[in-house]
Length: 110
Length: 350
Image 1 (cartoon, each protein chain N blue to C red):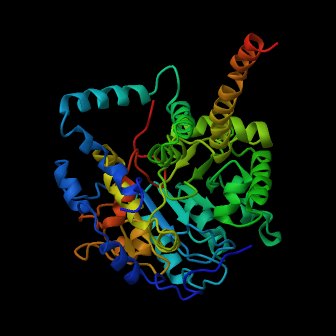
Image 2: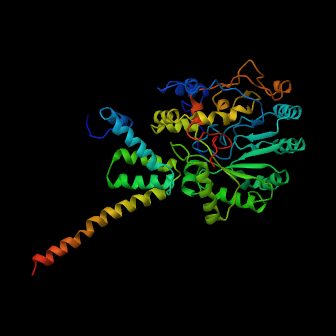
Image 3: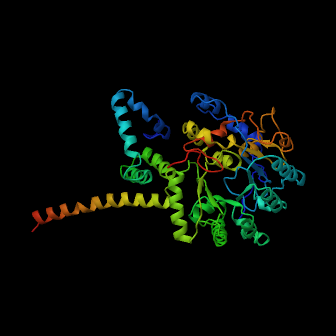
């Protein structure tokens, strides 16, 4: 093994259920319900999943939801914009902490 | 710009034999017959023939990356006159309601217009599987008027409403030319409500993945083609790319073949089987031989030898062709997800 991440491991995801089958079954029911068409379309949910996959930097999820978004009819342009949304929130989340920095500067500075 | 055909580049996958051998060599979880059996379904048979689909040959003004026919400008195989006459004779003696014409670019065949006129004179519904760009060539400029005058249903290929994706699959400049063709067809009444001139579009994924929901895509396409280009059409058909010929070659060269085939097998959906086109269509090759579908034709898998084998034999048994359908690993392409056929998904959503 020369890396922690192996593409074939994605297909082995169900093995996680071996030592906790009831929890795995509950997870699957919940997961499938989450991605079913509801107030949001399946495509919108796939694009959210794709964006979050980048935010949490999960290579398995990026592979799965790139294919998933295409198979729900998303275009490469829409998918790229979704990743920009995730990236902007990540960047903004760092930057907004600068307010805390400024609070501290004001508290301990002269 | 036309891309080279597999035949022209002497690709190892240029022959049907090599393609079948490559597909059979893949380590798939189960065979197509096993998948049917596991779902409690018997082997495929044809109930009756409602569509006579004829392939006029491999000549085409385009050479798309995904073409399962390996069609192109350098191909010379076209249906001889005698076979065209046999098709018309078989159609006349039968009660088959629909003649579905494909290719290559079928309109390039010198007998195309004669075939259409005579089939229409018999009162049959005629469908033309059109690549759109053919109508922008100077020698074929009056084709849209001819089609409209004969009330031909046009089923036109356009993989995406975005130029970049369409051109990536079908060649540089194809999108612009296709839009020009669609505008002309719209101007004649094609795709407009109430004209009785159906213009249906066909989209297939630009890559190694399954098509999206046909209903959802149709909504997007209607909105976007109208908004961007003022174009209207009737229905959108989604078609799964079949692992045959140039698409098979592309899968092989990009390292996607095994995972794509596994995806098709994994996505096998028994509910698609009832609507498969091989259940009510018979396919005639450019040489007059009969096949269960255009895909079997390209893999050189003729119909069960116990029944009629050529279009001339159809004169004896016009619509009853109940022998088993010949199947193989490629059949998983028509049964994956919502299914796939020349009329799009075989499972219709609300």
